[in-house]
Length: 415
Image (cartoon, rainbow, N blue to C red; front, side, top):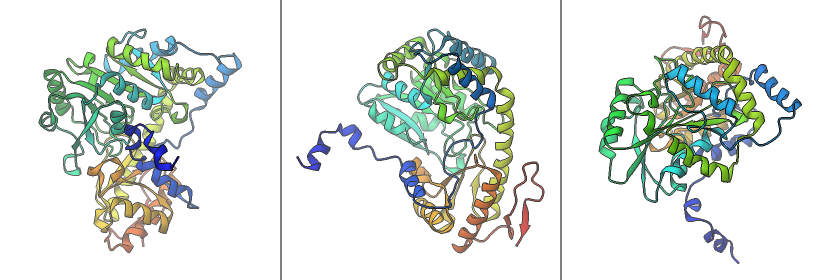
């Protein structure tokens, strides 16, 4: 049998999905020595010791068994208490909260539980790379709502309304946003909520970066009037508590929605690993102070990164959340992929091409500042050289030579 014949046996929905633009690019990174990576959306902090210790203790006590498909009840109760404390949202931990293998699984479950073949999902973009594929794999049709730097990478109620058709079933929101760092204006989000209620839309809201909000206060979609029962709220522990590798997330929402997601979960994942759940429980109980210290560090780096791009003559949107910058590199005359590949080749600095996140990302790159201060300093020294060779004139004749962990003083030194 020929290779093409084997390919034809693959589900067309899977065969036609392109590989992740992020993963494809990092195959190149793996082949290059001495790279400073500003590409991976992963905290550079190690999971705090008390959280790791809780995991170790659980192993010593013999916690190596399955949990309920729903997850440990004590963890679900802690999640419910946290949501009530943070957003005045009340969920029944026995019927309305599901512990998942990261937010990625929660998103997949939500799409599969909600969508019928041909149903449309409205997705503001640039968007995280898994949103469209998860929609397609569930039999849905992604409908993109482009946003841009001029509007703060925020979707509007008018955009949502203009895109509605009789097949529209789900609106997928993600603020603070990956890759742009955009946060939503509360008044605009309220308009979108009113529209969702009027047109009977289900909102799937990925709020994994809710604690990493630097401008104003995060608005939880489910907490808006009339939205609790029509919102599937997705969140987890990866970003705020530096627990990416633990793979623990959760979904909260109407009991019918969460029950349907649990049906799929119990036949696929069965349950989230118990050791990760024990660690997540400790994070919720005692991790607030450590999380706030990490967020303060990210905010300090955020200011430094924005200033670094602007001083080298590269316009940069000011992110209000997450830990990404999304500079407009079209001023160099290069496409997103050209910029990323040539920067990697010439200066051994890795960033992610903006078009990996959709057509609206062309002309931009995603830069993660969840890396050490020393690496940020050296990466921007190299990047400044790179853009100067492309004829970009710096706003000030300076480059970052040292990033202080305690202040912005002494960061710049004239050439």
